[in-house]
Length: 388
Image (cartoon, rainbow, N blue to C red; front, side, top):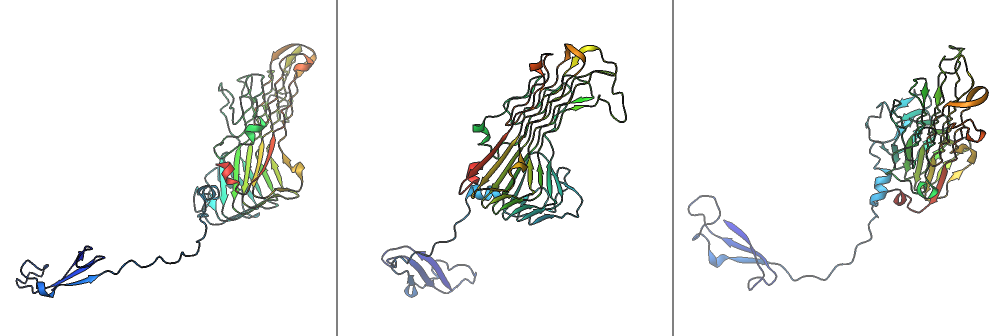
């Protein structure tokens, strides 16, 4: 039998090696050689040689992706996503995902139909994201519960309250919008629990991130929703509701971030809207009382559209990239106003301020429009480092 054991560096092997011992398994146990079974005169050593000279350095390997790069654009594990113009509208919001489920880390994304997503959605691609001429991404608003709950602030500095519109962020803050900002615009206020009156929901939050290019030939909708007054006359109710009531404020516009290592293009007919919602009109009832005023709602403040890319974005028609404030709702009064019975609701904010609702019978205290939001453009070689 042969027994091998490591031999440390020493007299037998200057640089270490292996000790080789032989012998006869006299007791036939088939195990390692026992004491007395080793033939010491036949012991040999297989020794290591001296350390050779250092070899040449190999060629430089490929640069691995940095943590933020992989995190920003995903790993493409969901494959390609294509929504054709012939397909029915698809609602990620309702859970109608692809076979990869809620994994929205695609390779290439091509949308030429209607895709509905929840506020806060991030769609990533290791290749390109293209919204075709028939394509649209509709971002559901940041809903709020319209009972006695206060308005939602959203990303804004403050929420609307009573007739006061919410206050929007300053340009320094909107320029720093990042992945951590998951909220869109704030909601409009309603000055009553009358179920006919609703403050507008704030526009939603959407992030598109592509390691390649982003091309918008269709439509992205993150508009704030308008305030509602369902007491006014309609086809089904020509005389309107008997009860007079003030209008609700509009919702603030939403927040869109486009992040690309390539080029972002908003083509001739491409549109990105993050406008504030309009305030609702007041209604002085089916049998108005002379001089009694019911206020109109303030308009929602304009939202935020952010372009972060390694190359300057190409926006063919700047008028199609919008962050306008919402219009003010008119108050309702019969004759000359002498008493404001109910103030209009303030508009929600985002980057732009929400407009105040009607707060007195004075001309200067009429409901106000929301102010314009911000469009942010930043060019950086590694734009994802600005976003995380």
